[in-house]
Length: 194
Image (tube, rainbow, N blue to C red):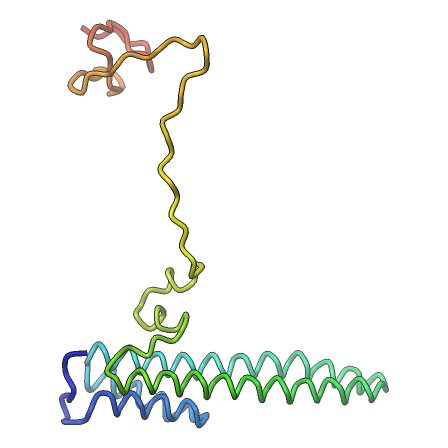
């Protein structure tokens, strides 16, 4: 980050901290307002990425709590209808614990992001930083990238005729395939070339 103040004289780091603070306080509308301010009013790339990360963190948290609520709460309700109250109570407890763990994760990620933003760095939230940067394809790929070693040239099987070097300037007049210097016929299409 090179600038410290935005168009309106506000500290860019402070605006980013406010976005993550609202995320930790479970205030999605406030996070959305800060993200809108960053994207539409300030128009600073660094601040926009931070605000988008805060917004994506908030969305991820609410989506995760929604899914766990549907799964565990729904199963608890089904067991309650079936009269298996001990299982229903256990699933409600699991739902409550899962919600608490998700909230703790939200707060931890928000605090880590605030600490990085205070130093003028990108929040660097896993997966969300790439999405906020606009690189959805990279975000969806595995984080561990493996580089493939260059493949060695294939050796012809034993007894196969050895192919002669192809001249870079001579091509078949019919199909355009590169030809050997002394060939009269194309090895691909069989057309006669002079």
